[in-house]
Length: 135
Image 1 (spheres, rainbow, N blue to C red):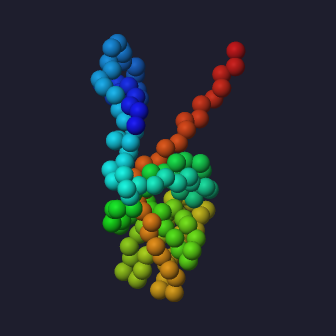
Image 2: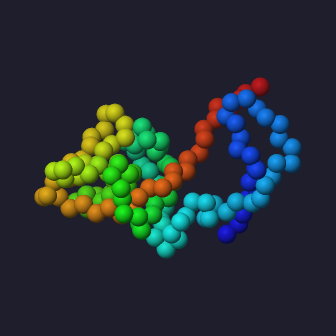
Image 3: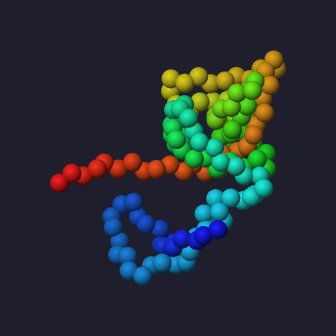
């Protein structure tokens, strides 16, 4: 996989710092984003139910199927044959798939439903939208 230049120092989000010849090395996104190559897949988000946790419509998610999903992790799940991305909450009486935005319903999975967790979301990649400046 191709590698891309990586700055040696993190870029401050506050005041600017001088940047002269600070390239450290190169970075392969595969090496940075993917731990288990055979168990990793990508999926796009559709909708707005997870914006409160930073997942937006159109984002590309990096999902690892080899991880046993911990409580409160964001997962790709299949409930009664329908895919969804939600926060997995393990409850004494079952599993709650929590939406990450107000106005969207949580899903309480009961014993009458089928639930399969396809994987744990590890990364979300989305475009930064900037305002176009006009002269």
